[in-house]
Length: 214
Image 1 (cartoon, rainbow, N blue to C red):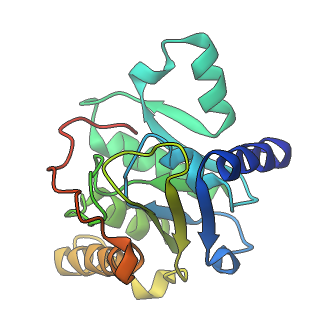
Image 2: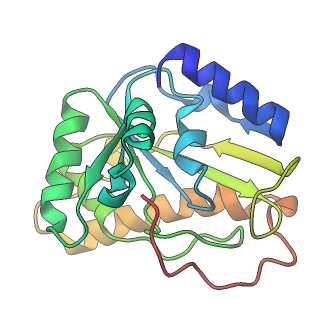
């Protein structure tokens, strides 16, 4: 997202929501890091790009690119299409290549939206990508009250400290290291999303949405 679009969208969010960003100083200056974020709403891909000044890429399901206008918009935000069921390793290799080219890659490791401020079990892909790329992971947490965003919702984007590559290294074929990497990322996300007393909504009791939005 270029600077003009980033600040314009950020201004709109401040007008529409009771919106704030915490921990913006934790965003690395270097390029080529993974942004791992919980998934609460369709607004998340836009939210996580706001504090990042370097090029950002994120996966989006192929169906979102059917409308030329909407496709142009999300491509401008850094989205690239993936085909569900076309092979996980192809998507992983694509992400690793983009990281090595200096892009920052956004991943929603839960794989689907959640209707409460809780972090669901993470998919293994985020750990595989982190291990293969050797990229640091920047954890982010999207927090708001209730099941859905509405006008003047209290909306917070929390940014944690980067997890260095050496802390989540995954040697080839090391399943234990892979699980440890995933657990470390999950721990960081839970601290951001579930750690604060006001982070949990009392009425958000629905189970996770069965669909996906990336």
